[in-house]
Length: 420
Image (cartoon, rainbow, N blue to C red):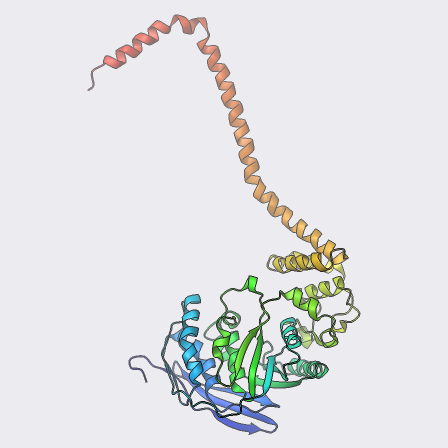
């Protein structure tokens, strides 16, 4: 263990069973506090290595600037990639310092290699898109309890779990459900969406055994990529000799994805976009995300098929989205999409009118300084012209001409006046 700085330590992982569930757990000690981290899995075996806990502990260790020590061997391929991962994250987010990792490399895995292929699945547009894109290859879908839905929201978790099991069945896949408490632990050392989310998903993939590949769906297309913990540069670096972690879907924008998958029955039945879920509903239908999705559905003429987003959107509801400054970018991107795919729809015309109205005050405000300058310049030119006329009157007068010798003499006297 390194000297001088208290290390973040990870105990040897423990495997156990809890009824029909397999449990993988370990203790992470950081800042003098012990955190028991667990992964409780239904329908699939857990791994035996410590790689999952390495993924859970590395960013917190980087945030506090402490070495990371693990009791137990770690994939040699993963250890080889982590200096690059740390370098990228430190370049993006300076609060995360590069730290030494103290762990023994694991022996090469025995043959044969795992045969399963998984895709993380929340029921959203991105995960549905990746699941359908790789439908012939994927054998299982993975839903994580404790990520976008808190572990404490048991009724909502049950409702979503039931829906996603039916969605997986309609796609001809098995659903693996994982419950984990890594979200509150990791979130204490950085922003979940900006820093932790991608590594947390990789951690879950590494907690499972038997998958040769795991797809993680991207929320952003290539033209909108920014430094994030879930990113095509960093997420694949968590791959091991047994499991390839693939960051997928950057080639398509959000509405392009929905356009490609909206004819699939499972999407129409079980698409989930709402993260507010007031009262534990599956989709609230009234938050900005739900309203934008309902606008797309109406533009595409699919409102009768998407039963979870009924009834038909009242276009007046989009006024609320347009009035939200943070959402106008999303509304504008939806407009760009509908102008290409549904150019004559009432939705496209409504959004175009709302966007034009929302930009008029801004345009007027931007034009005001230029208009003021124009007015002031006009007034100045008019005053200069008035003064030129007055000057011409003075210099052309008889008195001016008669006093010219006196002015000339005064100038000559000033020139020869002795300096004091």
